[in-house]
Image 1 (cartoon, helix red, strand yellow):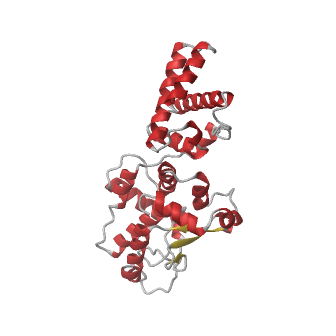
Image 2 (tube, rainbow, N blue to C red; image 1 turned 135 degrees about the vertical axis):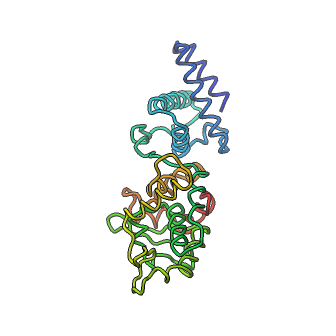
Length: 295
C-alpha cells in the first residue's frame, strides 16, 4: 500500500505538476489513512471497502479533525483511487458513493470505548434503581436502540432463550437485535432481583419501571444518562443518542460491515423484509459477538 502511495505522489509531482504544499498535504493524509487501515489488518489497496473508509472517517473525526481537513483527506483518497483505477490496480473505487457532506451528518458525536466503560461502571448494584439503571445503560449500548424504543420495551421484548431483543421501531417496523452477554446478564439480574421492588403494587408489563412503578419518559431517562456521564467525570455532552452513535461507531471500528450495522440500527431505508432475506439471525449474532466490545 505504501509503495502505491509513493507512486501516486510521484505521478502528481511529475505528470500533474502539483505544488509542494499540495504534495505534503496529500502525503500526510494518505500516510494517516495507510497507518489506520493497517492497524485493522488491511495491507492491500484492493482490500479497502466503503465501510473501511467510513470507519476511517469516524476515527479521524473522533480525533478532532475539522470538516475542511476531512474534505481534504477524502479528496486525497479519491485522487489516489482514481490513479489506481487508471493503472488498473483496482477494478472499482470504495469511495464511489461516499458523499462527505452526508457522511459528516451521519457521524454525530460519539464517545470512546474507555469513556463508555466509565459510564457503564457508575450505577453499581446497591439498590433496585441502580440495578435498573445499569441494565438500561448496558442494553442501550449493546443494542444501539433508540431511547424511545428502550423505554417502550415490555417483558415480552426479550427472547431469553436465544438472547435477542425484539424492537418495534419507527413506522411500527419490527427488528431483531442481538443483546450480548453483559447486557443480557444485567437485564436478567434486574428482572429477577429489582423489578418487583419498583412495581409499587401495579400490574404492568413494561420492562423498565420508574420510581412510581410506571413507564420512563424519554426526558426522565435523558436525565439519568446525563447524571451518570457527569459522575464518570466526562466533560463532553452525553445523551441517550450518544450510546446509539457509539454503538455503530465501535462496531464499524471493530470491522463490522456497514450493512449489518444498518440492520441492527433499523435505519428507515432498510425494510423488514430485507432484514430477514439479507442478514440471517445467526449472522447478526455472529457479527455482534465478534465485533461488539461487550458482546
